[in-house]
Length: 73
Image 1 (spheres, rainbow, N blue to C red):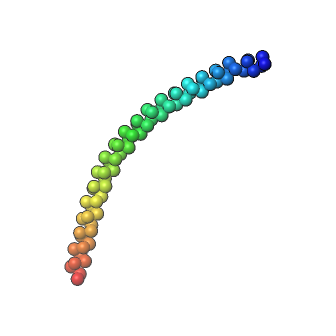
Image 2 (spheres, helix red, strand yellow):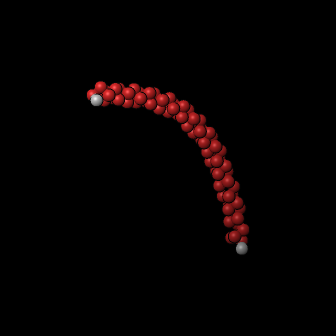
Image 3 (cartoon, helix red, strand yellow):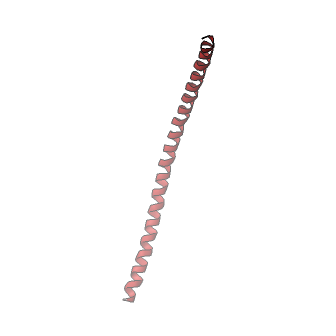
């Protein structure tokens, strides 16, 4: 029995260490999630602008070829 009681404080200490590590990890994740969310929002604006530019260019190309096809008919 003496052996079991001697290991109890070590298990308690390990539990506390694990709890602290978990809390630190969770706190780091919260900050990382916020940074990632901000980054995704910034990229969304950039991607929207790029897609608008590409859509405009694609529309010009489509109109060009439609005009050339119409000339051939």
